[in-house]
Amino acid sequence: MPRTIWSGAISFGLVTVPIHVVSATEDHSVRFHQFHLEDMARVRVRKVCELEDREVRSDEIGKGYEVSRDTVIPISDEELRNLPLPTAKAIEIEAFVPLASIDPLQIAEGYYLQPDGAVAAKPYKLLVQALGRSSKVAIAKYAWSGRERLGLLRVRGEAIVLHAMRWADEIRSPAELFPPTVELSDEEIDGAVELIEGMTLDALEGEEFRDQYTEALEQVIEAKREGQALPEAPEPEEPGRVLDLMAALKESVAKAKASRGEDSEADVHELPKKKATAKKSPAKKQPAKQTAAKKTTKKAAAKKTARRPRSA
Image 1 (cartoon, rainbow, N blue to C red):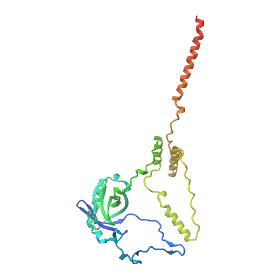
Image 2: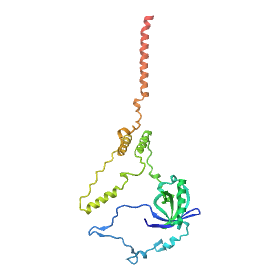
Image 3: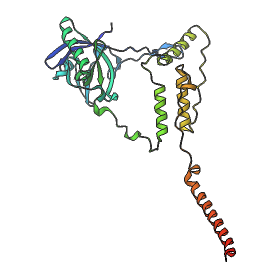
């Protein structure tokens, strides 16, 4: 069972739900320490007092706000816990909104909210079922780690999940990153949509959704531990230069079908072809018809002229 990160309550109108906050995720990354390469001795970071030039213990270290280089205002953990805010000891629900209205950039790490004892069971389940029936998420405010935060509450199974959120003014505008103006045909867009459909899955399951970097790193560590040769890295595929966007889309659709075990020859739809060039259009041939007509008229006139002397 993960350890409790924070304890308090969810405030839902006049309903209070005592809860414990525990982490909802795990980090399986391989961790490294720093070593002195000459003798492989461990290199550690030590906390040293600048005035006394000595290492200090954890119980000697506190927080402070630096007003100037010579003035620091100490702030204790007790003072932070007793801030004059309703969110200091509670997750205050402010509103309910559709999940689709939230910019995913605002959503950060997630935590499970565990009901604190039997007294919290009924109001906790009430909030779970109400959120599920309404198809909405709750937006709340709470104070952790020295600052007030925005949070999103949603239901996962029978549990409430709290997602930390970034404030709207913490999201940078992408305006300066917009690509230059380009023209796209309907055929190219249809081809990209077909590629999306070919790569669509019902769930994030399969070999492509595992952490291959960590697996490869573990293989290297195991090989070095056993004194064996390091596994060879596969030759990376050189990215091809896209000269014909439609051809690239068609080939990508075929590869997506093949990777899912489908018959790419039979299932890949022909992408719409580009319109014929103007050289082959009927409009260009029209002057030729007119010329032919003129020639026919001239011949007919010549025949009439040739016949006139006979009729005289």
